[in-house]
Length: 185
Image (spheres, rainbow, N blue to C red):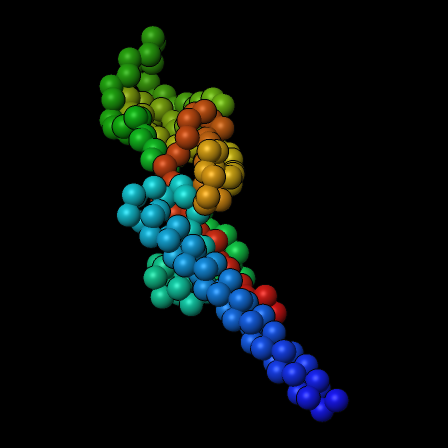
Protein backbone atom coordinates (compact mmCIF):
# COMPACT_ATOMS: atom_id res chain seq x y z
CA UNK A 1 0.00 0.00 0.00
CA UNK A 2 2.85 2.37 0.84
CA UNK A 3 4.30 1.61 -2.55
CA UNK A 4 1.13 2.86 -4.33
CA UNK A 5 1.00 6.04 -2.24
CA UNK A 6 4.62 6.84 -3.06
CA UNK A 7 4.02 6.15 -6.77
CA UNK A 8 0.89 8.33 -6.64
CA UNK A 9 2.80 11.17 -4.98
CA UNK A 10 5.61 10.90 -7.54
CA UNK A 11 3.07 11.00 -10.39
CA UNK A 12 1.33 14.01 -8.80
CA UNK A 13 4.65 15.85 -8.38
CA UNK A 14 5.69 15.02 -11.96
CA UNK A 15 2.29 16.13 -13.26
CA UNK A 16 2.63 19.40 -11.30
CA UNK A 17 6.09 19.96 -12.79
CA UNK A 18 4.77 19.32 -16.33
CA UNK A 19 1.88 21.75 -15.80
CA UNK A 20 4.24 24.42 -14.39
CA UNK A 21 6.70 23.98 -17.27
CA UNK A 22 3.91 24.17 -19.86
CA UNK A 23 2.65 27.42 -18.28
CA UNK A 24 6.16 28.87 -18.40
CA UNK A 25 6.54 27.74 -22.03
CA UNK A 26 3.20 29.31 -22.95
CA UNK A 27 4.15 32.66 -21.39
CA UNK A 28 7.54 32.60 -23.12
CA UNK A 29 5.92 31.90 -26.50
CA UNK A 30 3.49 34.77 -25.92
CA UNK A 31 6.37 37.12 -24.99
CA UNK A 32 8.38 36.02 -28.06
CA UNK A 33 5.41 36.73 -30.35
CA UNK A 34 4.95 40.16 -28.75
CA UNK A 35 8.58 41.08 -29.28
CA UNK A 36 8.53 39.69 -32.85
CA UNK A 37 5.51 41.86 -33.77
CA UNK A 38 7.13 44.94 -32.21
CA UNK A 39 10.38 44.30 -34.08
CA UNK A 40 8.51 43.77 -37.36
CA UNK A 41 6.66 47.09 -36.94
CA UNK A 42 9.90 48.95 -36.26
CA UNK A 43 11.93 47.17 -38.95
CA UNK A 44 9.37 47.62 -41.74
CA UNK A 45 8.58 51.17 -40.56
CA UNK A 46 4.88 50.22 -40.64
CA UNK A 47 3.66 52.16 -37.62
CA UNK A 48 0.01 51.33 -38.19
CA UNK A 49 0.76 47.85 -36.79
CA UNK A 50 -0.03 47.84 -33.09
CA UNK A 51 2.94 47.28 -30.81
CA UNK A 52 2.34 45.87 -27.35
CA UNK A 53 4.62 47.24 -24.67
CA UNK A 54 4.91 46.99 -20.91
CA UNK A 55 4.55 50.05 -18.65
CA UNK A 56 8.30 49.94 -17.99
CA UNK A 57 9.02 49.93 -21.75
CA UNK A 58 6.60 52.82 -22.19
CA UNK A 59 8.44 54.91 -19.61
CA UNK A 60 11.87 53.94 -20.94
CA UNK A 61 11.47 54.06 -24.74
CA UNK A 62 8.63 56.57 -25.13
CA UNK A 63 9.55 59.15 -22.52
CA UNK A 64 8.55 61.98 -24.89
CA UNK A 65 4.97 60.66 -25.16
CA UNK A 66 4.89 60.02 -21.41
CA UNK A 67 5.97 63.62 -20.73
CA UNK A 68 3.32 64.95 -23.13
CA UNK A 69 0.58 62.95 -21.41
CA UNK A 70 1.75 64.14 -17.99
CA UNK A 71 1.10 67.71 -19.16
CA UNK A 72 -2.58 66.74 -19.40
CA UNK A 73 -2.64 65.01 -16.02
CA UNK A 74 -2.43 61.45 -17.40
CA UNK A 75 -0.04 59.15 -15.57
CA UNK A 76 1.79 56.29 -17.25
CA UNK A 77 -0.14 53.76 -15.15
CA UNK A 78 -3.44 55.00 -16.60
CA UNK A 79 -2.43 54.60 -20.25
CA UNK A 80 -3.91 51.66 -22.16
CA UNK A 81 -3.52 52.64 -25.82
CA UNK A 82 -1.66 55.42 -27.61
CA UNK A 83 -2.19 56.29 -31.23
CA UNK A 84 -0.01 59.16 -32.32
CA UNK A 85 -0.93 60.68 -35.68
CA UNK A 86 0.64 63.35 -37.84
CA UNK A 87 -1.60 66.16 -39.06
CA UNK A 88 -0.03 68.65 -41.43
CA UNK A 89 -1.88 71.91 -42.02
CA UNK A 90 -0.77 74.59 -44.45
CA UNK A 91 -2.26 78.05 -44.02
CA UNK A 92 -2.56 79.41 -47.55
CA UNK A 93 -3.71 82.81 -46.30
CA UNK A 94 -0.82 85.18 -45.87
CA UNK A 95 -1.56 88.19 -43.64
CA UNK A 96 -0.05 91.29 -45.23
CA UNK A 97 -0.77 94.91 -45.98
CA UNK A 98 -2.80 95.26 -49.13
CA UNK A 99 -4.11 98.32 -50.87
CA UNK A 100 -7.87 98.22 -51.17
CA UNK A 101 -9.80 100.66 -53.25
CA UNK A 102 -13.44 100.77 -52.24
CA UNK A 103 -15.80 102.92 -54.25
CA UNK A 104 -16.25 106.32 -52.66
CA UNK A 105 -14.10 105.56 -49.60
CA UNK A 106 -10.77 106.84 -50.80
CA UNK A 107 -9.76 109.62 -48.48
CA UNK A 108 -12.33 108.63 -45.88
CA UNK A 109 -11.85 106.53 -42.76
CA UNK A 110 -13.02 103.00 -43.52
CA UNK A 111 -13.28 100.06 -41.11
CA UNK A 112 -15.02 96.71 -41.64
CA UNK A 113 -14.74 93.42 -39.80
CA UNK A 114 -15.08 90.10 -41.56
CA UNK A 115 -15.74 86.55 -40.42
CA UNK A 116 -15.46 84.01 -43.24
CA UNK A 117 -16.62 80.47 -42.43
CA UNK A 118 -16.62 77.20 -44.30
CA UNK A 119 -17.16 73.63 -43.11
CA UNK A 120 -13.56 73.30 -41.98
CA UNK A 121 -12.11 76.79 -41.61
CA UNK A 122 -12.92 80.15 -40.08
CA UNK A 123 -10.99 83.34 -40.83
CA UNK A 124 -11.54 86.43 -38.67
CA UNK A 125 -10.09 89.81 -39.45
CA UNK A 126 -10.81 93.39 -40.43
CA UNK A 127 -10.18 95.95 -43.11
CA UNK A 128 -8.98 99.31 -41.84
CA UNK A 129 -8.52 101.98 -44.52
CA UNK A 130 -6.29 100.19 -46.99
CA UNK A 131 -4.93 97.41 -44.72
CA UNK A 132 -6.22 93.88 -44.23
CA UNK A 133 -5.52 92.40 -40.80
CA UNK A 134 -6.13 88.71 -40.21
CA UNK A 135 -6.66 88.09 -36.51
CA UNK A 136 -7.14 84.32 -36.48
CA UNK A 137 -7.43 81.30 -38.71
CA UNK A 138 -9.22 78.35 -37.08
CA UNK A 139 -9.53 74.83 -38.44
CA UNK A 140 -12.27 72.45 -37.40
CA UNK A 141 -11.74 68.77 -37.93
CA UNK A 142 -12.83 65.56 -36.33
CA UNK A 143 -10.42 62.66 -36.61
CA UNK A 144 -11.75 59.11 -36.50
CA UNK A 145 -9.21 56.64 -35.17
CA UNK A 146 -10.00 52.96 -35.55
CA UNK A 147 -8.13 49.86 -34.47
CA UNK A 148 -8.78 46.78 -36.60
CA UNK A 149 -7.51 43.25 -37.13
CA UNK A 150 -5.41 42.96 -40.28
CA UNK A 151 -6.94 40.88 -43.07
CA UNK A 152 -5.22 37.78 -44.44
CA UNK A 153 -2.94 37.48 -41.45
CA UNK A 154 -3.18 33.76 -40.66
CA UNK A 155 -0.55 33.28 -37.99
CA UNK A 156 -0.14 36.70 -36.41
CA UNK A 157 -3.20 38.57 -35.21
CA UNK A 158 -1.82 42.03 -35.85
CA UNK A 159 -3.92 45.01 -34.87
CA UNK A 160 -3.58 48.00 -37.17
CA UNK A 161 -4.86 51.56 -36.91
CA UNK A 162 -6.32 54.06 -39.33
CA UNK A 163 -6.97 57.76 -38.76
CA UNK A 164 -9.48 59.50 -41.05
CA UNK A 165 -9.99 63.24 -41.26
CA UNK A 166 -13.69 64.15 -41.41
CA UNK A 167 -12.99 67.54 -42.94
CA UNK A 168 -10.61 66.51 -45.69
CA UNK A 169 -11.84 62.95 -46.06
CA UNK A 170 -8.29 61.60 -46.26
CA UNK A 171 -6.23 59.40 -44.01
CA UNK A 172 -3.56 60.78 -41.73
CA UNK A 173 -0.11 59.35 -41.20
CA UNK A 174 0.15 57.25 -38.05
CA UNK A 175 3.37 57.76 -36.15
CA UNK A 176 2.78 55.24 -33.32
CA UNK A 177 0.22 52.58 -32.44
CA UNK A 178 1.04 51.35 -28.93
CA UNK A 179 -0.83 49.15 -26.49
CA UNK A 180 0.42 49.18 -22.92
CA UNK A 181 -0.10 45.69 -21.55
CA UNK A 182 -0.74 44.99 -17.89
CA UNK A 183 -0.01 41.66 -16.28
CA UNK A 184 -3.12 39.87 -15.00
CA UNK A 185 -3.38 40.21 -11.25
